[in-house]
Length: 332
Image (cartoon, rainbow, N blue to C red; front, side, top):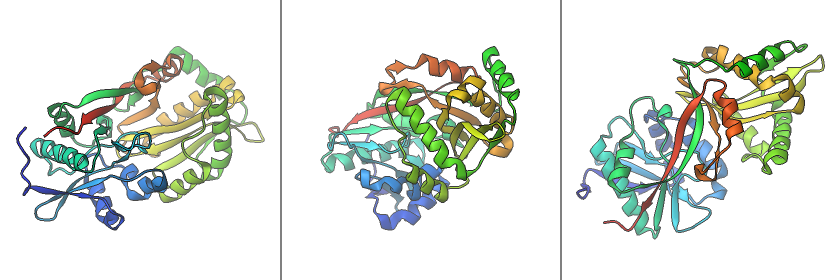
């Protein structure tokens, strides 16, 4: 690859006074998502040393941004972004393949000059793109980026959904027979759901939710249309038996957290919930193209939770990969 034209664009490190222009650019990118607005990224700013970049055209137009931070595990590594599932170079429609190649190479040079030895790049999967925007994947190839992690996420194409398995349909019918079974979407249920979620994660997996209850409530207040909780209640006393917290981007309805009580698992409450959400997806998430149940892999993708992915694939979901690449920063 030839040296980039230093007159074509400039690279600047993000500073808080650029938040407004950053957000305006994100809203115009082909992978636009509330996840990249500073009001979301900065809620956990104290946990990360920000290393985000802005790419300006010579006439001052902001062409692209790159969410990034120093790796919490290794200060010699920069990641795009350790606090986000995916990210990478977020480009406006003005960015061509050649320009994206130059931008990513310029980012590598910028980070190398700051003393970093390695760049972990996490591109947005194609389902999050409103328009083709995989110029960065080609740039990764040109820069000899190496695939280092691959997570398998289970996704339904809402335009062409596959049929559910017999088991999942049977679970929905069983749940429908329960007395006073209702689905609700009310932020008032977040504390009770978070308590259930924490119990399920700690007892079954030995972990806790990535977000605290206070953090999630704050984020839901900031993004009330983009982050919503759906819960299932049973009986005359409206017992909370299952729920899922969802993130909505322009193209994807993504299941961020999911939990069911013992009663909920027994009656098939989650199956009933997903059946309800998918039946009403135009009202729940207008314009969504995909329904993403989330990943079923561990340890960077080297371990597949076959029981978990079996359940998700029973809903007709199939795999989309969430990848990470490593770029050495010693190249000229």
